Length: 322
Image: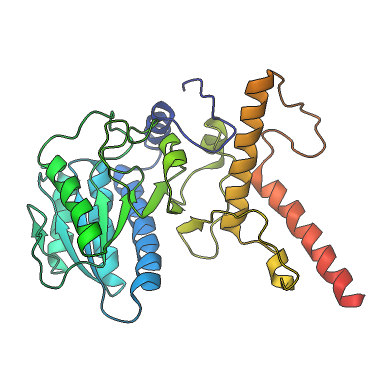
């Protein structure tokens, strides 16, 4: 594992993301097929949440643009689940993998009557409510994308503008450097990002709706790679939205329910807090003290939330009897 300067913020750099993924699939461990199925389900859940919010009651149509590697496999899985969720789906898969698992994924989609095309149809009369960018993941090195994917990325941007399609990227926006963001000037800016396992460093440069998915990380591996602040997913969910918290928005009319922030807001606030701590420590060269009464560096997220819940329960009880 590399020495990361962001181990306490919940973000993964490219090297650690690859090492974590490899460790998950070590023997004994997860198979690629298991992880891809869980990741694709997470993406489908997030896409469904977004498109239901954006489109309303009409039949929704998703276009999934899949790359040659594992990110593309996540897209193939997501397409199948979206059809099971009641959406129409079309897949664009310019370079099909000959590996058995990917061949199986294609067959599963074909059995669901999902069209699989070689290129994005720019003149589709019905248009697309949502476009899922599943081309490149955390293994992308940040160089200018090659064909046919450079054209695919440009086409997605065009549809995003002309059709007002909601553009969703899986794990990392395609063409972005995993650590640095859009270093090559792709002008590719999705509306939604679904980070898998944990946000990558480039997610700091993202502005839009942000989901975290991938409910499969064992505690020991999470601890090893500094992913200690992942919030628990609610109920049976495999994805959840990270809410961008606003400052100074409280009013006198806030209800009692407003006191209990949702998980997404808490997680984003926690990331922001840890990022500020890291920046302040770097600027002053003073490490965070381990006996700090307010913030304990490296404290487990579940413990913090349990304490938060206990505090809120006490406040609620006192208000009821008061």
